[in-house]
Length: 242
Image (cartoon, rainbow, N blue to C red; front, side, top):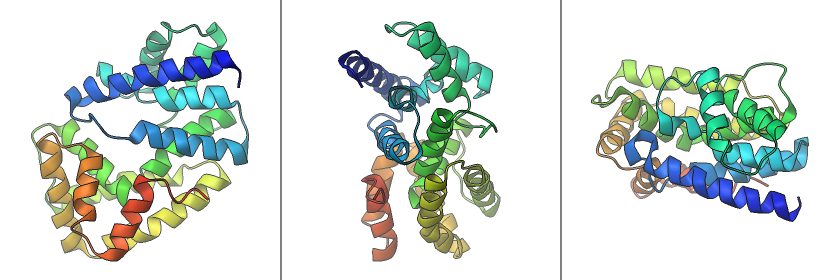
């Protein structure tokens, strides 16, 4: 990448983090490192799967920008809000169009999309896989529901179903291999339903009180057994990217 691209990524990343920390979910996500991890994952996938590195990293920074403006997470809403956000930067119209499109597809797993969009989608799914993915989705669902703490079998089933749907839509071979590996511990965790519900309730209660998902993960690292602890530490630091 040239100097112009590097400077733009720096500015875009800075502004995207501000929105993610201060406006999305009313500031409850402040301090979480999701965007940083997705960037690291996206860079790793690009080295193995190809694609335009600048467009991939720019999209990785802004894929959740629409959350700061509320509304339904539809493709159209994500595309519109992302386009508005990108308009303040010295990007070309085609760059804005492509980045906004890549971001609009990161939740849906829409078929027949460019490799750049596949990588953004897969990077987000990877950070929502494994034990960390369980924590992150319980956190998100708690905040979307507002006043409800997840605490029963029905809630656990809903979380698990969402995670299963996301992982089935992974595009790239590299991402599929990573997701499969990360989910070994998560699936082992789900085998004990009573424990799963108890931990889900702990996560949800803390999320309801405004504690971000990374802080909750650190709390659980100090409370869980060595096997799950290692899995969480590995995910927070993206140590599985080898």
